Image (cartoon, rainbow, N blue to C red; front, side, top):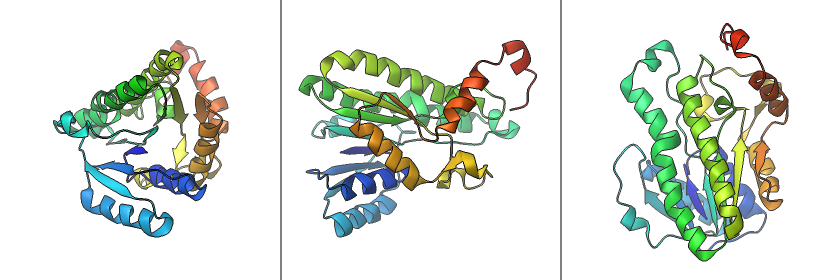
Length: 241
């Protein structure tokens, strides 16, 4: 299994879930920009599940040598890479903040996924799971830089799913709403609309086994976003969301 964003709370919970279900892999490749932290995670997986892991130093904000990834392959790719960034007015006009949001959530991320998608296509099998966000469903003033990157990522996964369907590769889009994770630790979220990583991992794992195309982590968000997507623009632009 290839895990992008391996230190993400949801990624950790998903790896634990799939291993606890008895699935084993020759290697789990943990992609990370924090090698020290991820090495401890790899040791944890081995101690608890006897699962061997290899930590791959890969920072999406830097130029990377893709040739070093040529020996890496797997039947399953799980992508939880993401960066929320600062979504205040200060963050909006911070060039570094904007660049990092776009690179980590979309522009450099899809280049990395494409590298492995090509291998999946050549082999003729595999599953790609990508975590997007409800923020990508419609541009809102509170987080539209992040939302625009996630909108692009959702569209990418949709197109990739369409392209790879006839090549026996499944692509699943996961759309979380509020999540109780490190990334949202400073944000107060409504409890009924917030899922914890363990809940999310269980939902994602079940959807993966059923080969679903799109799954909302909290089903209430499907209804909420259906309403938000259908608000007429002349009304929507006046709202503060």
